Length: 252
Image (cartoon, rainbow, N blue to C red; front, side, top):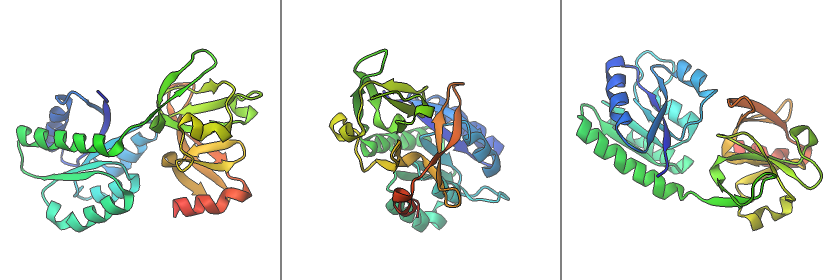
């Protein structure tokens, strides 16, 4: 059973504690981020990888609404709020444009009502994601079963540890590995879709879901990756001239 990494954003501390208690009792949920404000939320997010957002739509005097946070993240989101009706149109737009799972529950609700609704939402996320795996050979082990969505990027750059025909593969939840005798041209053959792993440079193939920002002045993409210190950090990769328009289109 997949453990979903969930973030909780709720400005009311009593409600936050209640939701936190509810979530910890759901077997396939791992609560990795809890926050009462958008500023704190995004600060924590720098070192976290989350798969699902549980948020209030109205964050009080916050500089952002829960909807705006969800629009920024573009990941599956479950809203728990008193004013869901006011945001139905926004939810429909987000669900259609970002192609993500969205559901909601209107306050007040009890634990049983929340749990049933959230479990149903998790089933929808699981069906929608249709998680796919590939089997890859590393220098120390063969046929490693790897979830495609855990791969951030592949590199043939020597500065990233690549040698001869080998490549480096970088993840969101584990340290990098060396791919043995691996060619970028064989990625589809290995099960890595070229429409998901975009070329930004002759040395880099990047999972577009992890491209956070494109810096047009320096022609670099900003991504998140798990480093040797076992932390998620932000790094920048160069985008060569041949691929700049492609990246601009993806980020527009």
